[in-house]
Image (cartoon, rainbow, N blue to C red; front, side, top):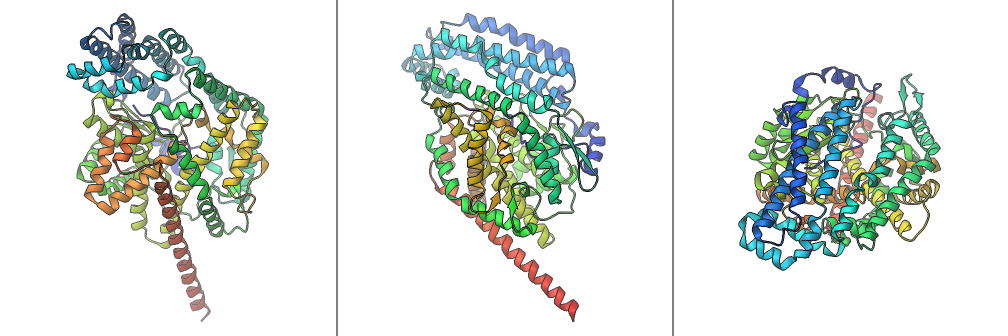
Amino acid sequence: MHYCRVLLAAFFTLGATQAALAAAETAADPRYTWDLSDMYASIEAWNRARDEVTANFEKIEQLRGTLGNSAGHLYEALQLISDTERKAGRVLVYAGLNFDEDQRISATQERRQLAFILYSRLGESTAWLQPELIAVGREVIESYIKEDPRLAPFAFQLDDSLRNAAHTLGAEAEQTLSYFSQSFNAPSTTYGLLANSDIPWPSITLSDGEEIRVDSQGYSYARSSQNRDDRKLVFDTFWGKWQEYRNATGMVLNSHIQTQTALAKARNYDSVLQRELDQDNLPPAVYHTLVTEVNKALPTLHRYFRLRARMLGLEQMHYYDIYPPMVSLDKKFDFETSKAITLDAMSILGEDWVAMQRAGMEQRWMHVYPQPGKDSGAYQWGVYDVHPYLLLNHNDDYSGLSTLAHEWGHAMHTLYAKQSQPYETSGYATFIAEIPSTSLELILQDYMTRHAESIDEQLFYLGEGLEGMRGTFFRQTMFAEFELALYEAAERGEALSGEGISKIYGEIQRRYHGHDQGVVVVDDLYNNEWMFVDHFYRNMYVFQYATSQTAGTALYEKIVTEGEAGVENYKNLLRAGGSDYPYKLLVAAGVDLTRPEPYQAMVRKMNAVMDEMERLLDLRESQARGVTQQSAH
């Protein structure tokens, strides 16, 4: 089951484009909403399924102490737990999707809470499993796997459990920790309420007379305004309001960091970073090599900002100048057109890919358009026994088209893994998850650039690609470096206040943006940007966006240069699901992210795109001069 949110793609506001309003009117059309009856025919059926899961908890508890009796006993316990998790997953996905259609409805809020409570109780009922497996020992477990072929689907799970022996507590301690699972999530829940519900967001009037509410959606929409005064007003209003809550938000984030630091210590880890990387058996060199190589590449990022300043006609870039498009594109992509373009672009991946994606797109797997109360952004959530579901907020622009391709990368990953893997090894790690999504964006971008009808249109797509590399490769690494700095401060016993956190963030933010070199001026107020990023409550998650884009770029290059062999290599990675540790799967596909070469290739690609854009700009200016001279004659 993979749950991906693209937080900065496809936000909408009531004051957005006319296309968005038209899309909202279309939202009720069943063709553009998902069909949750594929999971359960009714709420009553969902309730029965939840009861069935609950009934298994006692059965699981009764198997405590039996794992070492025989291979058959081990299989019986693992199969019951797997079946229960499978059913609980479907219960959770249904409740989550139903809630995200309209988050204002009390009944769906309560069902979602019940689903999370169910998952918490499942964790409690299985807390004894790993300590008991470790007590039985690797030698006995491996002999059982050889003896009983029914244990084959569980072999990787068992190896992973035994690998964590040094960080697994005794059965009683594990049981006790399981009771606190919801409490450990309290800082994240508190932050969500603060950011999305409790802060009284102000409204402003833009230069064209449009009034917008500067909440997260309004900020994301209006920060890309072509009017520079509007952009500054939006930034100052949004971050000024956040500053009023900096003490409280700092305390919430600090409580999360302190909780995670304590949990890492409790499990005998030297740091939170070590714990998080160890979850997927990732070498620490992946994280450190990423940060090192990105810092070496900051001159390339600064080159991008200077190119952006040239294209926007600015003598001095400010932080509020990052988001407006460098070239306007007067072109709309309605949803049916977006589907057709996406399928045509993916023909590079073979007929089987296109046929499977087309078949999925013709079903009611997607919730397409914005509507009041709907969750913002986009994600894919897969159900092994059913199919993937995709939440979109399509606005008939290129961002909507690109988001469609991104989320179908996740969906196709889910489908290929389901084809080749049993349930137990079908779920893939986050370290792998963002690779197909980012690579499909690259495929789409190259396709659109090739089919562009003018220099300006080419510049638009190339500029979007550059902005994607900035936002994912550089910005997410900046977040990762900041997050690591916070955890290391806490692990040294230092205090973290809202003001102190802003100072740490500001120093890294200014270095990345070349503030001291006069590349991008970052005002003090914008050091509060960390308060906007809910991913900091997901523990060393953000670096995987940057590594995934790096790997996705490398794999796409193999597709382009090696043809069918590169395509098959790519699909084999998706088919592998979670059958091995993600680092090993990626190395088998030809990409080693502990080495600097993949990151350096990413930087070279960014420079090559800028080379092409500068060539096109020079050509456009030359043509303009020629037209001017002809007019003079």
